[in-house]
Length: 346
Image 1 (tube, helix red, strand yellow):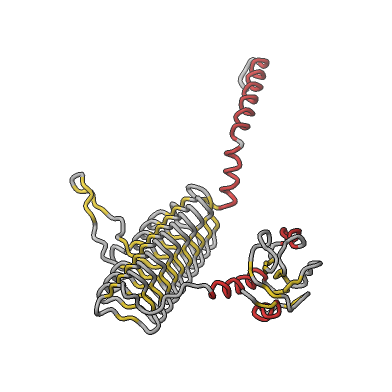
Image 2: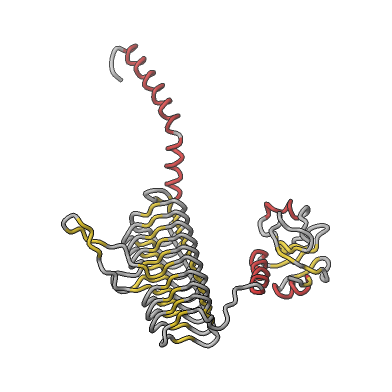
């Protein structure tokens, strides 16, 4: 990175207070920054760090001035910094161009203009890869699968047969999409596998983290809605439907046929039971267990999950149980003494 503060201000629509000709050569957090770096200040609690950071310039909110520092004033410093980070990231982004000679591609695969296929990728019969998609090294794409335009699939991802991936999707390494749903019948003491005949549909602008597993439906399809972002190490079971613009955080597990409404947030290590509906805009706090339907807009916590305020009150009382036990013992002693004095039960 090598840009003047004036150029950066133009990019984010900001106002410079200080030296607009200052050359920025890097970006960093406010604690880690060194001379030449650009950082940002969005949370007021970090204001004391602004005067001691080694960063050469800081992106700040409107009307914020920091003595001795050049700043770029913006409406949203966090978003402005994201735009700068994107600029730097794009400069060193993954580039897969053309078809590597070691890729194994069936004769009838359709590959769109500008798409790149990396070393040792395997694409089976009937699959389609959209324009400007990038398929990195070691990716497996099964028969009849479809990869949308401008989608980026990082190394060692498995996209099983018949899976449909939308446009501008990002899938990180180690993820498996379209694995068999976990379904068995117990027959004479043995577990007989139930065929999983459906597929997975990942809609446009979804990002899926590393080592995520999304199972194909028994029938019909498992769906990941447009704009949803899934963190690392998440399990999505067969016939699950996740709505649009949801966030599903690391180590969450969503059991078969559960439905997650649009704009819901499933935090880390949350478990969602099968056939449960989590309503639109609901938030499920970390390490919660969802065993029944959640109303739209609700905030839930605990196992089994309850309304957040109630659940936290209950937890607070549970932590006080040792004290309550001692107080109960004292009360029982006092009652016994009163009964003895009065010669009768009270």
